[in-house]
Length: 279
Ligand SMILES: C[S@@+](CC[C@H](N)C(=O)[O-])C[C@H]1O[C@@H](n2cnc3c(N)ncnc32)[C@H](O)[C@@H]1O
Image (cartoon, rainbow, N blue to C red; front, top):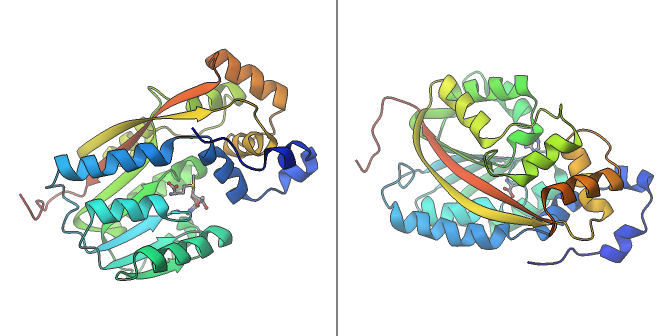
């Protein structure tokens, strides 16, 4: 597993500097400590090989919510949605949106893409009347940051407005059943309100989605020598300022080797009524 970058720099930062760290630097520090890119790159081609008739194969249009720099979503498109013609991305972080535009140009120049630099809540408000609908919607690791009320509104809008009949919602999210990260969040702030994959699945079924298929893959987070960036990431996630002592105590109570083991799920849900094109 890769070691975190800029360690010596971040260790010298004061807590007031921590607050001003950009979301991207916190998120990158988190991803740098994980084997998620390797595991994802192993899992996606395997899914494409084993499930060549997924409802997503013929998808031509897609909405990606919070794709960040887009590298995971781009890999997913290449293997699972090879006929994609148009992509609408909604990414509120300006630095991520700039990286996303660059990566789309570099890796998917044959797809018409537009990046809206706004939150999904803003996008939904603007597209409520007469907006476009999509064959597929991808939401990879975004629901953690959206409050419960907005999540419910979002699921209803995904089902009723944004997905065409027979379209597919793809959610990638940490699974509570085997996620040390979510247990760590419980220890850091018991009232954090962060949903698990199981919560999002229940929410999707509640608004009328039909469950299609799901895949699980393991990832591990290396928490040895935690630095200010990792602390800032978890403080942001659990919506509470966490001290380094509290963080270390919580991690060591979960894992003597400081490796937090997690399962990520990729779940697919369909709007009802229309069969897969390839069935
Ligand atoms: C953990 S990152 C995931 C990035 C990418 N999807 C991936 O799997 O690597 C969460 C992303 O959600 C975006 N985000 C946070 N709140 C959002 C909102 N309300 N609407 C849309 N995107 C949001 C962040 O800017 C960030 O890019």
